Length: 434
Image 1 (cartoon, rainbow, N blue to C red):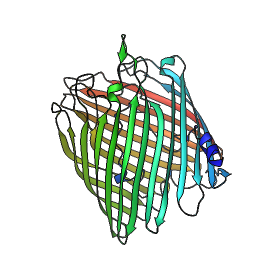
Image 2: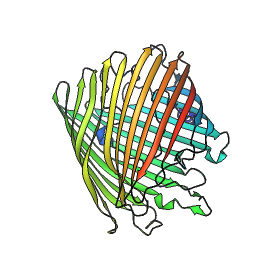
Image 3: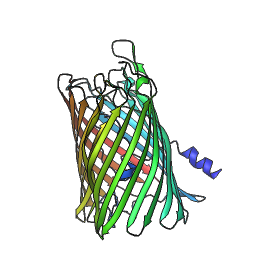
Image 4: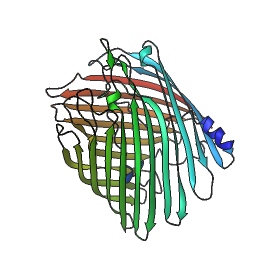
């Protein structure tokens, strides 16, 4: 009954933007999972970051429920978007109200761990009801300690979401494209002396829903439905006290549900990534990892060209002062697309952030995010640039307020270029938590 109660609560969400500054850039193809490179910040270090560090006077304490502790939350936001449809450089504006109920449940066991999270975002626009959305997601993640230095990790989740206007493969409908997503992952992680390793497999399934097309007819999304089955491995060597070196790789097999897309092309493909890198943790002052290597993709259809090239990326955080954290993150890799004439996308992106603790309970943040989508086999390149500011006011354990502003734009180049656009977004958020 207690587990059932937890799952019953789980159709609500942790406020996604409560502590993390985000810019609502146009939807790009979702990256393949990269668990071999770590989840989230790689090695936060003893001091953590300005936003990650504990604040005992303002952090939620949760509610006891058997062997779990449950953290419910309820977020509400009002946002103004200057160009909700992204149809031109400047377009129609609108305001949206968003409700985000949620819950997180974490086990309180001496060994092993299980966490259950769920989220929902319900958006209602003032004048454009076609843009209303109802997103929800739930996930279970945990590990079992097999013995000292060896554990089995697992994650499983599902969700329903929507693509914002301006997405690469879903543009052209009278309303946003919605989709279902299922994911699962299992990995074996261990340490032996100066060596550490992680090896495992993951699975992602995507199912997109058709929408009415602008000008009549249906915008078919069935040829985007696909599943990705992958395997990954990483080997670390802790070569020095402040860090070490690693090699990592993964292999993916992407299978689309339809044999060919609307253009008569088979989009099934195989892809590989192999990188070597350095991880470091200089006493929690500077920490993260950088890597470089090679990626490749080979479509099954001979009419689509193979893609290969240099990849590099990483994530670094630096506490330049006890009250200020600077972050830098980047990556380059290949993504799937069903755009006519293109075999795939090579996506290069860089994100820089600055967070400052002005007061113990007042956090300021800024972000700049750039992304380039290079269409392989097609003369088209899309450049996205986004920037944002945010202020989080932690009133007490129960109540938080947030104000944010974001600007983003798309420029498209080449013979097959599409229209560009820009927009401004201003938001006010309220979070109730326990």
